[in-house]
Image (cartoon, rainbow, N blue to C red; front, side, top):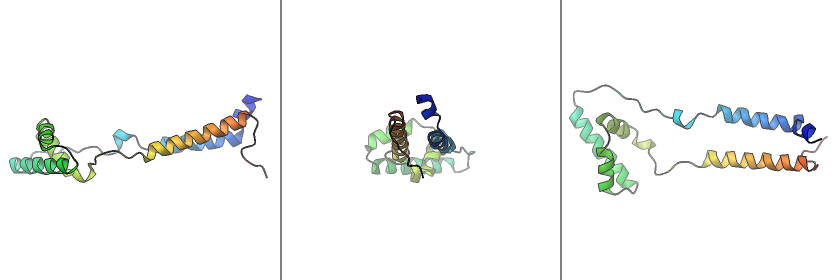
Amino acid sequence: MPRRTILAPRLVAPVLAWAIVLGLLPHVVEGAPIPFGGRSPAEPEVAGLALRLATAHLVALGVSPDEAAARLAALSDEERQALAARLDELGSGGSAAPSVLAIAIILGLLVVLILELLGRRVISRP
């Protein structure tokens, strides 16, 4: 009886739909690759400007100026320029929305599964 309940179409279809939606989401590492470009003739000026912009932005986010300078000094010139070009994307934390949504869906499916296994009617039939 439990095997028949678990493989019921009314339970398999939502789980399959959820798996397809989850599979279509992009991976975190594929979200925004940093492009690296070639060298420019005004490289020292661009590197200095990139360093000042990145330091100012990190200080605005709450990092101490000494720590920001130390972190940026560890980067190469190309990495500093790429960071300065993408400062608008830099935030002080990540978004928890996808995680919260995934946890809510998983909890909902677990509740439905437990109720189905206990013999309770979860989805009304016409």
